Amino acid sequence: PLSRGHNFSAGPAALPEAVLRRAQAELLEWGTSGASVMEVSHRGKEFMAMAEQAEADLRGLLAIPANYKVLFLQGGATQQFAQIPMNLARPEQRADYIVTGDWGEKAVREAGSLVRAQVSATSAANNYTALPPRADWDLDPASAYVHYTPNETIRGVEFHEVPDVGGVPLIADMSSTILSRRIDVSRFGLIYAGAQKNIGPSGLVVLIVREDLLERCPSTLPKIFSFAEHAAQNSLLNTPNTFGWYLAGLVFQWLKAEGGLAVIEQRNRRKAETLYDFIDTSDFYANPVDRAARSWMNVPFTLADSALDAAFLQQSRDAGLLALKGHKLVGGMRASLYNAVEQASVDALVDFMRDFARRNG
Ligand code: PMP
Image 1: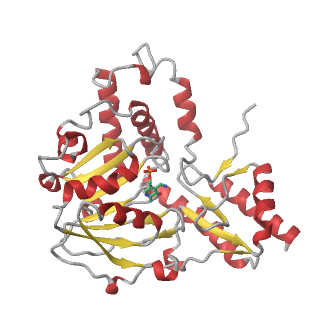
Image 2: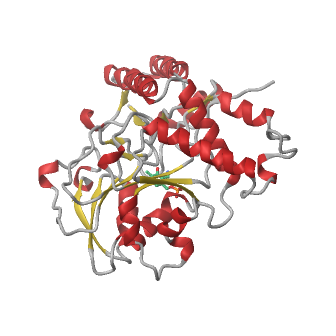
Image 3: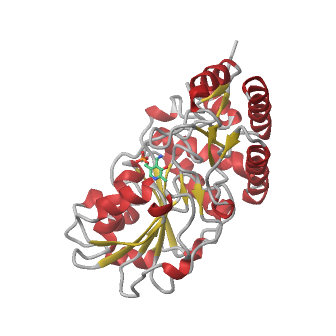
């Protein structure tokens, strides 16, 4: 018998069970291909049709304007920390980074060896528990771009509005927030996301890039690193992550069938509220993040006494609640509430937390 748990992993993270079942059902024979999706050419008719449908579905879900390219690449979000400056800024040019957590820190550090990367605002001083006020951002209108991390996965800090950065292209690492809510893509120059939270399996990264920015890609770049080359070849410059692309396509179909991002957004808001409301009314659990910047996707929390952490983790695991251990940088607990995590799982978590507090408080 199956014993799938309530999965609160930060990533690779829960996928919709309906998607996994469909992939299971067509694993040996995919469509009329007589083989699995992993065993056919990425240049064949069937794969290309699937790939185009996946892109069309993603475009529909996010209402991506026609002047944006969608790329399905490899190398994860981490590779993009380097590839974005390589493609979109000249070595001597300034690029502005808004750092609201550990991933933004990594992004600016990597960019620093390639371009004049500036930390133009940071909330490091308050331990990344709030967003730096927009009025304090030191932006340069001549910068190549402004980079930020709309949702910081480790400390659970999220922008609930897209910041206004004037005419400079805004670049967003949406790894842990993409598809969790509606967004206005036209506000961005480039959006990128590692797949392993709300999109599909790891090993795939999705990029949404405004076409005019592709003109910046230096022709001297090795082709494999060039956004312009990947765009010109429809992400088939070399063999893509075919299974990842296929599974992402199934997730996009699932999101459409669930009613699209307006519905998903309502669910995610309610899931997050359920957990934060419980934490706030409890004097046993705490979340340090400014209420206005609390993430819908990643909810870190601590217990009144960290000596109880090990018991909490063991007993939650025994109750079928998976992966609640916080990131090693912050300790404590973290519950990630990506799209595939159902309200029922959040309710089960809160029930467990209430019971654990009663027994140990
Ligand atoms: N950015 C963010 C916001 C992330 O959460 C992660 C991974 N957790 C990364 C970047 C790095 O992604 P990858 O491991 O796919 O390179």
